[in-house]
Image (cartoon, rainbow, N blue to C red):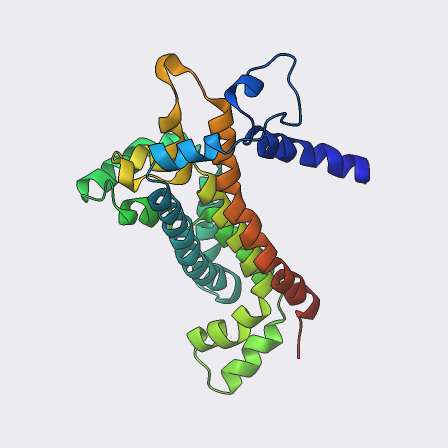
Length: 260
C-alpha cells in the first residue's frame, strides 16, 4: 500500500517541487526532483501576468454554480424517475441515459450557437446554464433513490405529505452521501475543465484559472513549465482544501445513513 501510495503521489510531488524551481533547473538535463535553489518567481509571474484573483473567483462561481444547480435539477429528475409512476418513465430514462453516449464535442457547436443567440457569451449564465443538469447525475441519484424503502413514501403520503414534501423531508435527508459524492465529482470536473470556459469566454477577465494558464505560453509556443506547474499547484489547492473540509461530513453521512 505504501508503494502504491508513493506511485500515486509522485506526480503531485513533481508538480509541487517544479513550481519552486528556477528556469535553469526546470530545463536542466538530467532532471532533478528536489530544487537546488528554491524560488517564488513562478508564483510571482502568475500574479503579475494574470488577473489571478479574478480568475480564481470566476472558477469558484462557475464550478460552484454548476454544482448547486446540478444537485437541484438532478435530484428532482431522479426522484421523479425513481419514485413516481407515470406514463413514459422508462422511455424517458432510456433517452437520458442514451445522451451519455453522445460525445461532448458533437453538441459543442449547437450549444455555443444557442448561447450566442441568447447573448450569454462571456457571462456566467452562458457558462453555467448549459451544465445545470447532467445525465450522469440523474442516473446516479436515481439508482440511489431506488434503494430507499418505499414504506417511507407511503407513510408520508398517509400523513398527507405532498410529493415535494416527501422529496424534501424524507428522500433528501437519506440521500446525503449520494448528494455529497455527486457534488464532489461535479465541482472537480468543472473546476478542472479547460475546453468549456476557453470556448464560451473570449474576455480575459471572464476566464477561469485553467483557461487563464493558457495565456502564459511564451512566444513560438514555448511552454514555461515552471510557471505552468505553479499554476497547476494553485489550481488544485482549493480542491484539496474543499475535500478536507467535506471529508469528515462525507464519512459521517455514510456511517449514519439509514432509517431512524
